[in-house]
Image 1: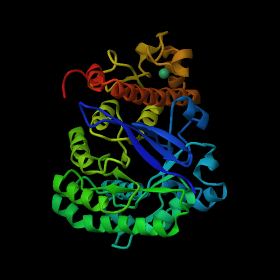
Image 2: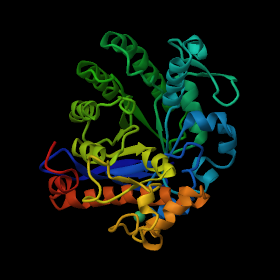
Image 3: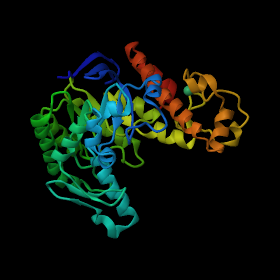
Image 4: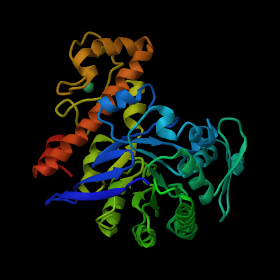
Amino acid sequence: MGKFGFKVSFKDKSSKARIGKITTPHGVIQTPAFTPVGTQASVKSLTPRDLKETGTQMFFGNTYHLHLRPGEDVVEKFGGLGRFMGWDGPTITDSGGFQIFSLGDRLEEKNPERTKLIEISDNGVKFRSHLDGSLHYFTPEESIRIQHALGADLIIAFDECLSYFLTEEQVESVLPRIHNWEKRSLEYHEKHSKGNQFIYGVIQGAAFKDLRKISTDFICSLDFDGFAIGGVANAGESKKDIYSVVEWVTPELPEGKPRHLLGVGEVDDIFEIIERGIDTFDCVIPTRLGRTGFLFVDPKEGNIENRFRIDINKSIFAKDQGPVTKDCGCYVCQNFTRGYLNHLFRSRELLAYRLASYHNIYFINNLVEKIRDAILNGEFKKMKREWLGGRI
Ligand SMILES: [Zn+2]
């Protein structure tokens, strides 16, 4: 039997930020914490040793992708996701819903005639694989069965990821189905879990305050181990919407259970969501941006306007002998220059992607660690001002 626990050890007086500890069968996560995403059981170009060195505490895998390739049965035979990929720390998988539904959205935009590629009923969702077009059917029970086989410490209830173009009436009409799917997820989990995996319920309701309240009340009435807030990652332009949703939801959640925000984590977001009481969050941005040459930099050079990044591809960096950013203690900043990274990106050397991902993940983990220290020292607001400026 594994163990799971969550304990808040300190609360910020000037905000809802909190310091805590999530205990899982594969180790402890100090919160707030960032979780890099490794879609195919790999954070692209980084080894698990790199993840450790960059301060990563938990690995986030995608159920949809791992189900299609290599298949949960294969991963299970290798001893679960962590063993399969050589990572001995805590792991979390999503429900697969986000990929299935965003796949539907994408296809809809490109080719409206092919919207039938996903077909939703009250029982579940039928979809075609983006790899080979094969037909698949996900129900709440199937999502949890797959997540049990993948064996991550934390798993997520199956829900429907709503398109951001829906009206309030449309969202209201599908909310009961989503809630029913989550209830079924929990029931299946309670019946079949070996006791070493822990399940989060997801709060939906798009950017509508009343619907978020309804969803929060319903999901909190079920006996989930933790809570995730979903459906904000594709909230379009408005970061304010993301922050509002978090602000509405977190005060309604039980204090003693962990809260995860799905798919958010740019530098300014990190301050805003931690301030509003989020414990963990996952985001593809540090690695996805890194691979195109966008590297995070400290305040002064970095600010809200440039979103704390430089584009290392730019010719101004070709002869720059400084590190990516001055105060970063990572292996990349200690050993390589901007000029060299500029050269690697321009030559499309594989090392470019690795060094960029390494720095960006270290940078975000280090930022979150500094935020934890600032909260403990009563200096969170001060640190936020130093990074984001006086406004907000
Ligand atoms: Zn660095």
